[in-house]
Length: 423
RNA sequence: GGAGAAAUGGCAGAGUGGUCGAAUGCGGUAGUCUUGAAAACUAUUGUACCGUGAGGUACCGGGGGUUCGAAUCCCUCUUUCUCCGCCA
Image (cartoon, rainbow, N blue to C red):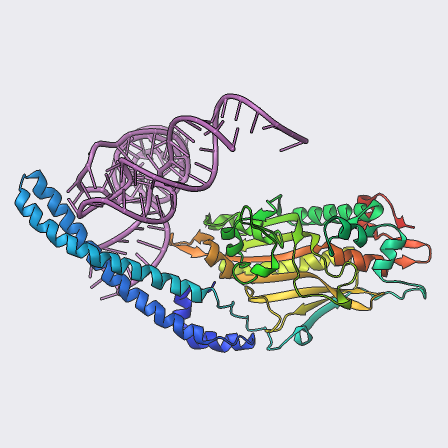
């Protein structure tokens, strides 16, 4: 959520910047400013009138004490009139406040200056690439075949138990996942992130805080009986750990990490590109989150990008880093780098991580603040990134490391898996 | 799930329906004293909205109500604690 003051003072700039996202509904900005103007004048009226009522009430109190019943009754009659109009003003103000918020919530974040215009992922800009694309033997197959061949995972079983898109892992497939999770968590901890195990179901306030509500309601599983949402990423509960907090400057940056199952409805995405592990409803991910001083958030972003990059290097996977264009940028993000890994049998780049700076967009919703040198509260910046999401990493590992004799496990993982080969 | 008790500022803990945004203690900050520290003393110490400012307004778990006036009375929801039941 953008800061109201900022919108008020930078309306034209905002409209221009939102065009980079192809955001159509720019009239909201003008509406917002108008509704806010009304809200402020209404508050002024309300405050003045309440102030009047309060004064009268305390005068009445004095008169009663002095036993001046009649004079008190005169004033009483006066306040009764005021009361009615107070109620109306109060009601109007409430409506206007809601109206401001309803509009504010519809505005996406302002893209960073480095974000290029564009419509889709085809306009994303490659900023870096690394690793070697492997040459596969002639009988090489995609991961879904490999998983079946070596009995690592079953989609049929998942369908029987839950439905399409809920994979069941077993044997070395399950072990490999556990190894990856442990490896990623160890790396994050080494990098200074504190590990959390958060709830996997969250309430509406929490889902609103990170921006899943109202924008992406349809993407989350909703447990209607208790009105809870299953988390699409650990970012949601972990960032909300700090909701309403006023941090000390010396405690910044706050660095948190968590492994969790992630649940996504993925409504409307079907087809050849979602085969196997490319897109599933439940998957595991290790997330890193930072809450920083506003002047330090881009430093933190670079640090997080470097962290994710080092993971891919450790896993010896060919990768490229993409700066998302305006059209592909998430609703809440100012600047996002996507990491893609080359999955050699599918001959496709798969997105395995997304690292974003939200600046104050989330922290404004969650009121995550710090106290500055003048002891004034200021909003912090928040960032997060996947480090990493497992299914596609698994897909690429299996495909890229397959040999006629079996699948080789990268060195960095061997102490976690306890085996060097699946075969 | 059943019965009871409670919810006040960073924490602890007062609070009679009428200057209560709220006593007091601890903690925090600044200062005095000290070579330094501790102790002691003094002052200060919530958040947000509106206003150029003076200042105004809201907030004592959430929502609603009674009243000229509510932290204080009523209704309701939520949470926590204790006891019972169930259970990994």
